[in-house]
Length: 129
Picture 1 (cartoon, rainbow, N blue to C red):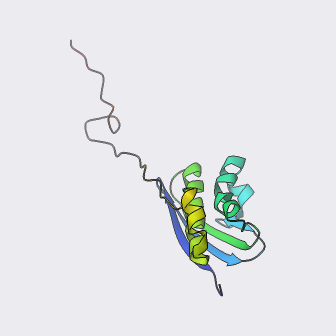
Picture 2 (cartoon, rainbow, N blue to C red):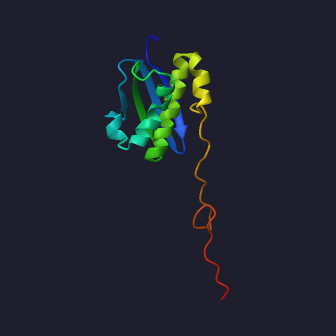
Picture 3 (cartoon, rainbow, N blue to C red):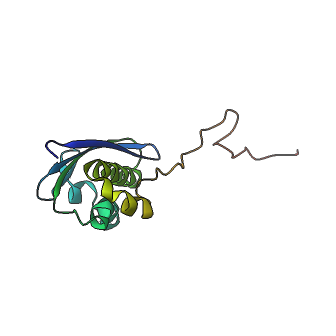
C-alpha cells in the first residue's frame, strides 16, 4: 500500500468518503476528531467495528468526509466505507467483514411523501359528517 486508499460508504441518506492511509490509528471526520464529531460512545463503536474485527485499529489513519442524513446514519455510512477501504487494502479481510455484515449496504430508505397525504402513508382524519 503506497498511497491512501479511498472508498465510499452509504446508509439511509448519508454518504461517507473514506481515505485510509498507513499511520497511528487517528480517525478524523469532517476535519474533527472522532470523539468530537460523534460524541456518543455507541456511534464511535459503530465506526470502529470493522477495524476491531480485522485487528487493524492502530495501523491506519482514517480521514472521512461525510454529508447528508443524521448522525446515526452517518456513523453507519462511515463504518461501511471503512470496511470497503479495508477490503481494498487486503482481500483476506473479505470473509471477516462479510461474516460481520460490514460490507452489506443497509438498503432501508425513507419512503417519499405522497401528494394528498400528510406523510408517505398517513391519511387525513376521515369525517363522516
